Image 1 (cartoon, rainbow, N blue to C red):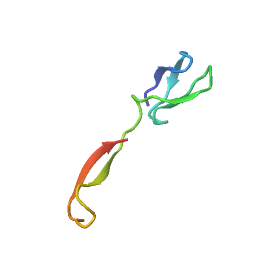
Image 2: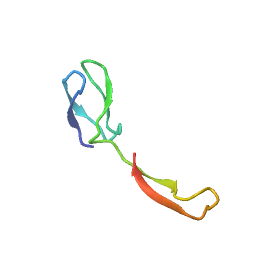
Image 3: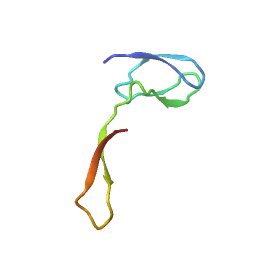
Image 4: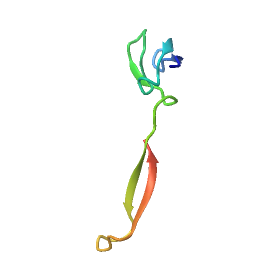
Length: 69
């Protein structure tokens, strides 16, 4: 497993040797203790989003979109 060095966005301290894949990008700063998530190392999942495009009486027309979380 690869380790990363990441700067805390709150206090600016560089935290070394973090295993971000294991924690889904979350880390606790060694200096200030704040818990943050690195957007570069988080896992994204595509989920279907269903939008109705016509009135309630017409249930046959539905658009589907994939949205990242």
